[in-house]
Each structure stands twice: as C-alpha cells, then as structure tokens.
Image (tube, rainbow, N blue to C red; front, side, top):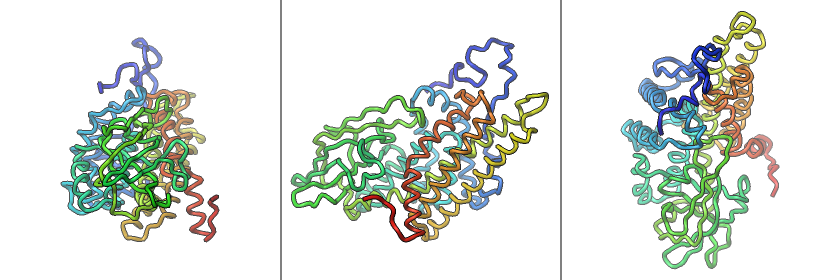
Length: 431
C-alpha cells in the first residue's frame, strides 16, 4: 500500500496554493509514545505495570510510524494494507493472551490486552478488528476448544502471524440466533467430516490462511443439537470466499461471504477438546466481548482528542471555538463518556483477571461502551462541523466505523437481555 495520496490529504483535494483551505485546522491525534493521552483524564493507564506501559509505548510508536499514515487511504479504497501484518508480527502481540510471545511465557493480563486494543482502535478500528479476529476469535477457539496437540500445531505459527486466522460463526440467516438456527452442517464420513453451508461477515475471510468454522453435527445418530468447530484451510477444495462490497463502516476490515460446498476435512481438524455444543463458541465469545468494549473506548478517545484539537485551532467570530460554552459542553460530555467507558472496561478486565468476571459483566461493558461511543462520535462530528465529513480529517472515519462496532460482538439488545436476566433472575429471551 502506497503512502496516502494527495487526494486524501487533510489540506483538501485539488485546492490551489494559497487558497482559503490552507488556513483550516487539521485535526490530528497526539501519537508521541511518551505523551499521555488527554482522553485518559483519570490516568487509568497507571493500572499497568512499568513493563506493560513500555510495551504499550512500543505499540503506540508502531501505530504512529506505520499505521496512521496509511489508514485514511486504505479506508477510502476499501482495502487492507497487508504490509501491516509483518509490523504487527514484529510487535509480538498475537500470542500475548496465550503466553506465546517474547514478552512472557505467561498469558498477559486482560487489563493489558484491553489497553492494547484501545490503543489500536484509537488509530483505526478496522486494524484492531483484524487483530481481534486473528488473536482473539480464531486463536481463542483453538486455545479454548482444541486438544493439546491442536494447540501446539496451530497456535505458535499464528502467534508469529505466519498463519492468519478467521472465525466463521455468523450466517446469512443467523446472527443473534445462530445458536438455535445454525444452517451450516458437519457430517461424519468415516475418519473425515463433510462441511456444507454459508457464513457471512467473516473478518479476515478474504486472506486468512485458516478458517475456524462452526457447524451443526448432522451425522447419523446425532440429535442435531451438537455444534462443533473445525480448523479449515481456506484453500481446501469446496471453500470459496467473496469479499462483501459497499460497506460504509470498517471498510479496511475485509469481511467475506464464505461458501462451504462438500468441504472434506480430516478428523484432526475437529476441535475435540471442548464440549461439542454451542457452549464452545459461546466460551470464545465470552473471552472477546470485553475486548469489544475496549475497541469502543479507543474510538471515543480518538474522537475526543480530534474534536479538542480542532476546537482549539478553529476560529469563528474572532476567537477559537473552544472558548464557546456549547462547544465546551460537547467536549466535556465526550470526555465523561470516554472516562466512564475506560473505567468500566478496565474493571471488567480486572474481574476476569481475578477469576470473577461473568457473561453479564462483559455484556454490560459492551452495551454501555457502545452506547457512549455512538454519542461521543456524533458530538465529535458536531464539533468539527462540515469539515467532519472529510475522511482525511479523521473524525468521519471514526463516526462511520462506530456503527459497525455498535452491532458486533453482541447487539445492544442481546447484551441488554443477558444483563437483564442476570439482575432479575428472569429470562426475557424469545424462544
């Protein structure tokens, strides 16, 4: 991926030299790895150890040097800058949750991984989605549901990002209700399995090396309720992928429709270390839902910082708009939303680290942070005004991407019902 073209630069495409556009402020994120984020108003990053903060500074330095310069062009072109994979591999992040990194042979704390995801999402939500799908969902499936032999076979090369993973659960007719209505099937045939069906919205699906596919067991004698996970090479005969075109959010994320037509895999591809029910996929989602709250938080941090920078530099009526009461009201609301989201995401991560986190804790964190994110990006776009709809000015990309984050890893409605059941003891789910 080439450097961003002039047509996407924040100084307005085609503006002649000396035009009035040259005087407009250009919102930018503070990317100095040694400078604290102004959006972390309560200094939550101090929850990290010195070594963890050093790692986070290294992540920030890479994001500043390699990711930030290319994401606006990549977003506009609906393309994933694949050169970033080598950079993320050099950071050694993918294996952190599993003790498979040079940083430590012990799994990293959820608090640390949360700040990492917020940091990446702060620069680009799509890039964070790539990392989350690979390290969280795909590797997490193998770690949670695979045998020791399967973990040894796939996790080390995935940790090194020599092998990239995707996670195939959602279907064309099954999103929130995929647990009860999964249409993709797996049928045992001797020592092999035959997979048939369709998956949709599969992140990394166009270029991943391996796909973790979840399917309903319809083998002879099966009751049709068993759900099993399989590690399938994307190049396996019968597997076809098609990029989903025309997205208005997370455009850098390469989502795919996946068709499985008589795909034959060996028994060694069955993730047989789990229960063989949908609870296996649920356990993986339970791990990653908290990460989604951090992604929503990172987007808020960026939106607040961009709006604050713009407000200090943009002048109207003879002075910076930061001096107007209504602008300050918007900025303080954005900061409050962001601060509350960091606090909830961090406490949820601490509970998980301490062994006390529940589905309801992660569901509330995702629901709350996503709600606050939606409000925060709208306020940021409002502060930046008409200039906020130009991709190169930053805020427009976060405003659009927030809509996808609002829905994935559990919609607001589904997470509300999870928490509602936990606090009332009554299930309001429709069966």
